[in-house]
Length: 303
Ligand SMILES: CC(=O)N[C@H](C=O)[C@@H](O)[C@H](O)[C@H](O)CO
Ligand SMILES: CC(=O)C(=O)O
Image (cartoon, rainbow, N blue to C red; front, top):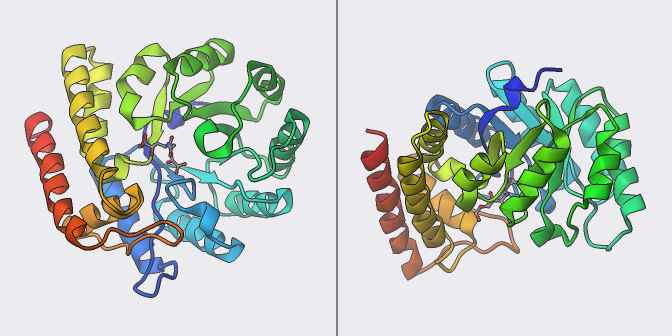
């Protein structure tokens, strides 16, 4: 198993809706082309940023299908298949394998706070369902479960486990998972605000919810890390963080703000599904300023 294809910048793919709020095939394809042409290394499909938690099984399948049909064989595709029940997660896992995804990933079980035995069994049943490699998703701030080193070690005994996407805030977690995982194991940086720190302490790659709003900047940040240009790496991270804070400062959810930014870039993928809130009123005007911040940063570092 080569882990090389899991290295680099992996935007978390956004849910693409039509004007009625239904999953849109043409808009999904359009977003695929847009991100692909920016030069990304892969995509993380149907995760948190993909609003997967608000989609039914058919909608999840549709999104997985449209992305695979557009980009399969061109870049690395990771299917997030975590769903409320093990049964649905397994259905999605099998479907992702049929579609030619390169790997599976899943959050731990949601809603009920379950013991580690249940979490272990949940991830293991997903892995048993296909031949695909598996990437654990650790995101305690949304799931309420923080992956322990003990469970990590136990999971790692399964050869299908090739990586972890770590979204917890301590960069130390990234360092510990990398130390345990070793060279042939991929640790993905989760918090976009700490991309550079995560990479320096041991992350091999990044999967992020804001990459899609500014792929140029994360690709450049990666270039700075690779070439050892730490001064510029620090600077671009600080500018990225100002942008992320701005994306989170309006009256709609961060994803709705990102989608408005994308509209200003000519990519209309609709807004967000409730209970996520859209940007409204005067705040819609402020999106232009955020787009300007992004363009300025691109101008500063990339052009
Ligand atoms: C909690 C959460 O959703 N984390 C995402 C995934 O790791 C990040 O990519 C964030 O979207 C990003 O860091 C902005 O806060
Ligand atoms: C990384 C992220 O935001 C996702 O899971 O979609």
